[in-house]
Image 1 (cartoon, rainbow, N blue to C red):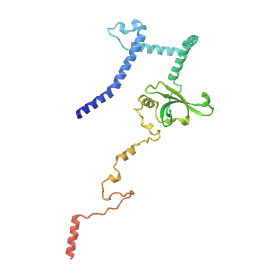
Image 2 (image 1 turned 90 degrees about the vertical axis):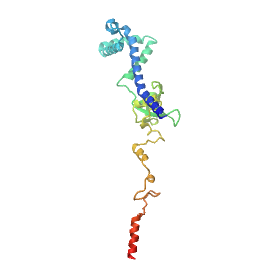
Image 3 (image 1 turned 180 degrees about the vertical axis):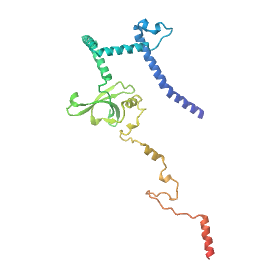
Image 4 (image 1 turned 135 degrees about the vertical axis):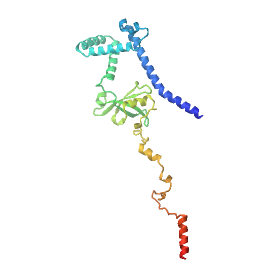
Length: 268
């Protein structure tokens, strides 16, 4: 039984080590193959190593896509590129359905990739859907109530409540500042908490939840030590019920008693 239990432990440990590596390699290979399948057919034969090699070279399409996107970005950064982009957006703006899709997609990418944008900076807890039940939210920014049609002068948080295990979907909330418990946690740790369905819990969360005490290291050390009542009695004795030390009566050894008895006989 001990051998089977140890073998089971080794197998589970192997899964913990190899599963993340295997999934990462598979996702990376799938992404490279997907981009290659899209871009490689448009490459000229002279730029495609697979056309004159006996085997297919993976990643050629991904490299070509990276170079093309970088070139387009550099072109759009100068005056000529901005002029061409403005004409292109004007053309798309005249198409009934295409303009809505283009504007929505552009706004999403600008919000997600812009360095000066208001990205998620804090993680908080909100009582939802009832009191005593808490959900994790990502705070985007602080705004005034007048910006969203509420009374002016009141500060609100724009918070996003993600769903588990897919944090890309969720709900948008506008909450007063006193209704959000800001956690001492990074956005990455909050995302791990949501994706893992609470299995990966940072220790800093416990200090913000009511009724869940945070056990510090020194408290653990005290709990692991033996209580005063369990300590063996020493020369000073044990402890009394009220915590004070009681005086111990020294016991005379047998040799001391014999010497005292012989001295009394001699004197007699």
